Image (cartoon, rainbow, N blue to C red; front, side, top):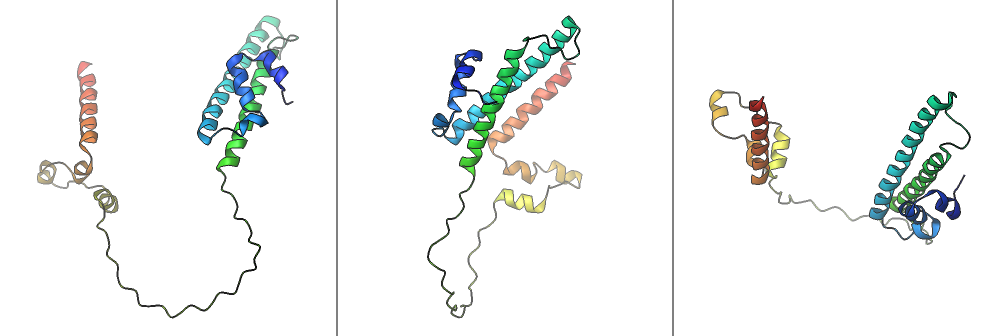
Amino acid sequence: MAYNRRQARAICNDTEYELFTASLADAITLHTPAQLRSKIKRARTLRDKNTDLFRRQSLASQESTGSKRGRSGSANQRTEQKARLFDEVLKRFEARLDKITAEPAPAPSKAPKKAAAPKPAAKPKTPAKTKAPSPRAALAAKGPAKATTKKAAAAGPSAQVKARTKVQVAHKRASTARSQAKRDKR
């Protein structure tokens, strides 16, 4: 069942109602992909929250009423409606995001295609200058460097460490020092 504005207003608070109205046809076209992702996250959170709340309320109701389904009249009905409402909202936002991010199909041209003209004989290609690979690319091609002897291990940092920036090295050192401090504290 699709919820209308009146029904949503009756079961939602102000911020939830704003999210609902943002998912309607007249407002959903105004959102950017980043805004849609944010609204998807919020709608998913609200849907999950209300679904979990409904389950917990049903379990509590089972214990108090003794019924197998945990339903006693209209108990928990509002929570279930909110879970369904935000599921619909989430589906609308996701469908819109998929529609926006999907690559448009190339439009068929109206002019008939002409037969390709024969290509002239190809010129022999001259070798172009090649760039030297970056240190990271060179390391990735070689694979991880391993020290096989004690002298090589004691010689200094590996090529991977040299390729890192100063910030990355400092971060790793500090992280290692904190881990060691935790172990020493035990």
